[in-house]
Image 1: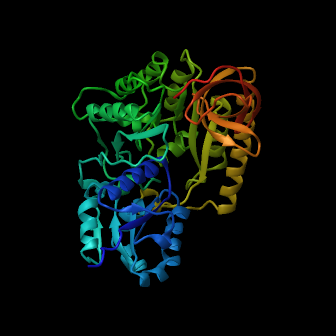
Image 2: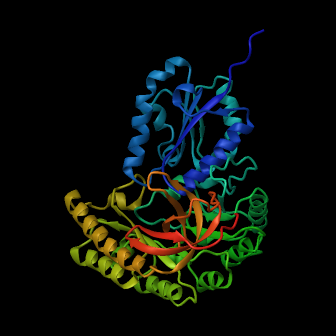
Image 3: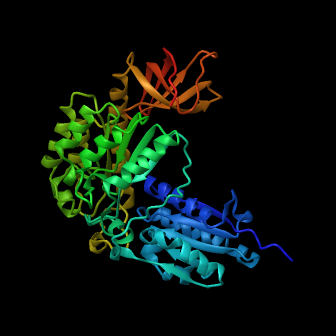
Amino acid sequence: MSEAPQKTFYLETFGCQMNAHDSEKVVGTLVSQGYRQVPTVEEASLVLYNTCSIRDKAEQKVFHRLADYKKLEAQGKKFGVLGCVAQQEGNKIFERAPHVSLVCGSASYRNLPQMLIQIEDGARRVTGLDDRATDECFETEFTARTNPHRGYITIIEGCDKFCSYCVVPFTRGKERSRTSLSVLAEARQMADLGYSEIQLLGQNVNSYRDPAGRKSFAELLLAVGEVQSIKRVRFTTSHPRDFGRDIVEAIDSSPALCDHVHLPVQSGSTRMLLAMQRLYTRDKYQECISWIKSARRDISITTDVIVGFPGETEADFEQTLSLLDEVHYDGVFAFKYSPRPNTPAIGLEDAIPDAEKSRRLNVLLERQRSIQKSRNQKHIEEHCEVMVEGKNEVRNQWIGRTSQNKTLNFTADSEARIQPGSYVPVRVTAAFPNSLVGELVGAVSAS
């Protein structure tokens, strides 16, 4: 009697932290269904791509990857496309890549076990495309976490904001929050497993609405910060429309909440914000910034910016640069606008040449680099608590991250007992635009 063939899978992830954490849950689901994860496509019987469609290049990369591996179909491998591109393209994926057997949007991940059974039973094409119809979140006890010290908890899925450039409301469905009880139960479970840092995730994490009506987002932050053995709590990404002073007050009052807020602005021009359907003004955004800057703690601020949105004039762009000068961000993620399918902006005339978009992007990044260098130099001689992430053996430096989410590379005596996940006091001795440098100054505490 011959043995049944092993069920193995390979999963590649494209995109943001939300996608990375979705993949952790997908991996756990597959393992619970008897699959074994393997490190290469060649070893896998099932090849999966968890996709991102925020940027055009990420989407193109997925289809290039599928084309590259079409030749492996003859070996009996099955292919699946998950995530945003799956939801966006739907059944068109089967036309572009006929060797694909599974197309599943993120709002349908809870149905993966049944979909896998269909694939195993020989179904040629299986789809899960709930779009904005579902009210359910993807909750699973089988999450396969890849970092043993920092863990992620998705507290809200989907998006109801409908910014004119963004495909997320169409690919991840409507906003739907988990109950605070389920979030706290997962946080306590993670603490019991040895995690010391938790990051709460959502497309608009601060749009969280407890279905049971027990806690606001700020109250949930405080409650997670009170979980025993949890030393750090982070959250991303916040939307300015739902950002309240109570979030800053929570950070001020809880030592576990990290000194960092990521608050995307996208443009410093109110005219552009209106065209982007962000539904706040520059003044309203600056009010949120003023709350953060008036906190008792020194809270670092990072943001997202889009340059070259249709209709953006040089004057609009200059307003974005002036906002950088006023806020003095600790970090900026900047992108050139690219039209995305199904979005309202797709109908706008994209009259700004790519070369001009690139010029504006380079000008902005150079301005921000100077700001970050100045911001980071203020940390010299400060003592920071650093969570150790690893070691650069070539430079003989340990790599860590501060509460402000800044990378701090530091040296230590060879006898110091440092391990990834430990928390160590470090004196900052030098600063660069994207990192700090320091030296260990005291005892190591375990995670």
